[in-house]
Length: 293
Ligand code: C2E
Ligand code: MG
Ligand code: MG
Ligand code: MG
Image (cartoon, rainbow, N blue to C red; front, side, top):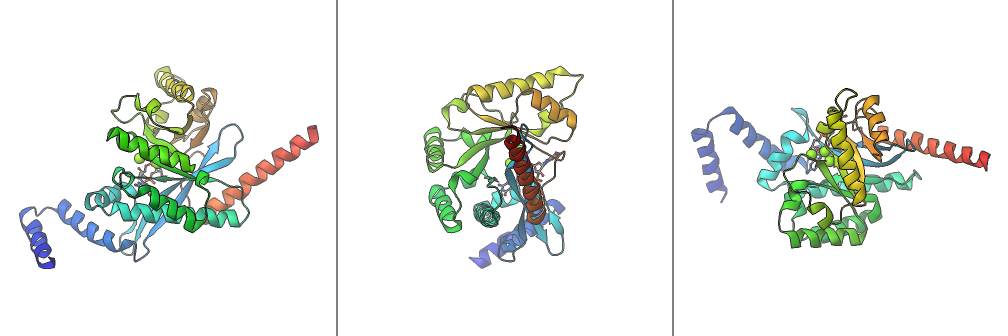
């Protein structure tokens, strides 16, 4: 088998001898060793509750620290891992690591937050998905309502019964589900009422277009938010970079924002500092309330 594979690789180098396919080949080989060599890490981006200004949740995002290539972003290696199927193993590593981290923060007595993890279609469609997730939650002793799974619209385009079953089971366990990059897929909107979804994440391309001059994009965002609310879903705006965007989103009743305006994704230690600050703010607000009651 190894010999056959070797022969295949030999063929790849000689018939499709271009830099791109060579690069892909090398990267996929390195990726296979990355978990074992502990080259992956997670960074966390806080999501801010617009009304209270506090952090109630975060998104975990993967980074690959290669010993000689440096940091590699997911946009570069996730597609390669999807191609080889390795995404399933990587996805499980992400899930475990995020839950472990969340338990560490809880054990330190910090205010509980929900951590959102991105799932690729392939990973979401694994037959043993529910068992895998349940086991991770049990092993790490994290409450299901502190876990959120982000999937994109395209994941929902498959077999309706299967997807619906999976989503219903996840919801029954208490796990939250959000739709990532909302508005960039080609899907019909009818799936929004067919599936049990908690949150819509408006894609950053819409947020970028927010302005005081062009009201068209604002109208679009306002429509998405109303739609979500009418279906009992909450809304997170992704890629919020300016005060102007924040103010517009506040006026349109968007619940949470995520973006460079508050913070890029950061290492656990820095995120912990945010959590402590955020907690101080809650304590401060509670103290204020007490003064007035
Ligand atoms: P995503 O899930 O939509 O994540 C949001 C991306 O936007 C992140 O890029 C984040 O760093 C970036 N971002 C956050 N705030 C801003 C902002 O204000 N402006 C701009 N321009 N960008 C902002 P990142 O970390 O490079 O991840 C890219 C994509 O890779 C993610 O998009 C997600 O689809 C995928 N990904 C990341 N981690 C994982 C993972 O663990 N598993 C899987 N399957 N996919 C992942
Ligand atoms: Mg995401
Ligand atoms: Mg997104
Ligand atoms: Mg995405």
